[in-house]
Image (cartoon, rainbow, N blue to C red; front, side, top):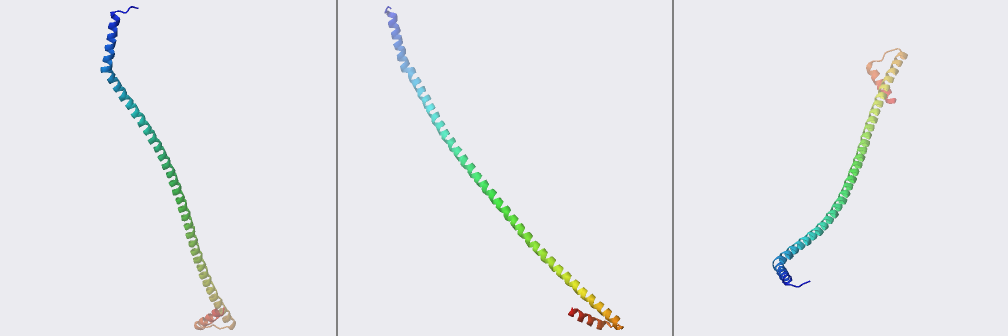
Length: 156
């Protein structure tokens, strides 16, 4: 291998190329790399932040779901209690109405029985007077008949 002027020329050209690259091109490349590195770091930081926010959102969502389930269970319990109260109130009201109906029916029965007893007494008294008339063979006037009926009813 011969060392000649071409080699020196290539060495000088390479040195100028290196100097030119270091002076004018290399700063732009390092700046672009720094900016890219910063963008990547910012992106990673944003992704980490988004991941934390996502985990926080999942936690909050789980809390809300638990809370909603608890509220729903409470509402169902209140509804069941309200239904039971309504059923108990309806039973009590029906019982009271039944008692009123039974008392009314008993009163009506007593009234009808008393009426029947009075009619029977009156009829019995009239029969007794009719029998007495036939036995005595004479008729009794209305005034005397009424007083005798009243007297017989009071004894019976």
